Image (cartoon, rainbow, N blue to C red; front, top):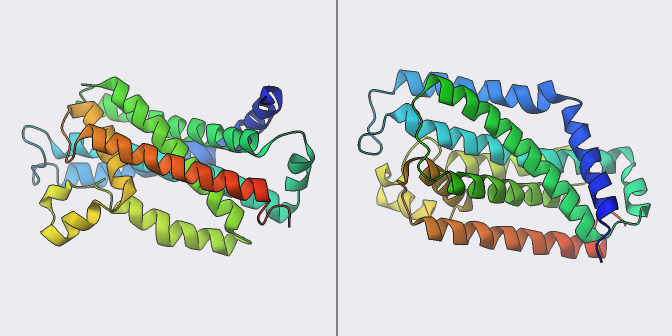
Length: 254
């Protein structure tokens, strides 16, 4: 039986942690992403025709929102875990009556909250300044939550295996950032040469961006069901790996 009280307490502690520095964890990513929209959307808005009848700035906004959700969900769980390891206060959490599953659920849920908070901030500003359509809002919500959960779990995995900030930075700069930027945030993969188009199908982040964008326009590069299946598959795989490592106490109890 799950210790919901303990899980909730750890979740609240994680939310309060990033909310106490909201300028850095929420407002700064919103402003940074809006700068992307200002530069790319305004400068090349009339020079690209991505989907028929759709302005480039309209195409760009969902991609930028999902990029922000992915990066901030990852940053939340990874930074919290590595800080706790480096400062030595992870011991107090591990000594509490919280199982690995409850530990995982609390960290992932907090990462989802931060990812959605940043994404919502960008969407609010984007909806005011640009003409957005909301053809299938349920898909928007589904992909936002599943993608944030997957990245929260991936951030936890990075935090577990990293021994110092340098290791985490390498994970973020050489894996997360390239996969994010090459996921179709700024373009449709149909505009790529065949080789790069095929290669994009091996990038799981592509399916999250494409599925999320489908919720706005009901237009996508691949089937929505394929995007959902790939996203769920990676979420399941990341969750299983995390739970195995947490149960064994790899690099957190040793």
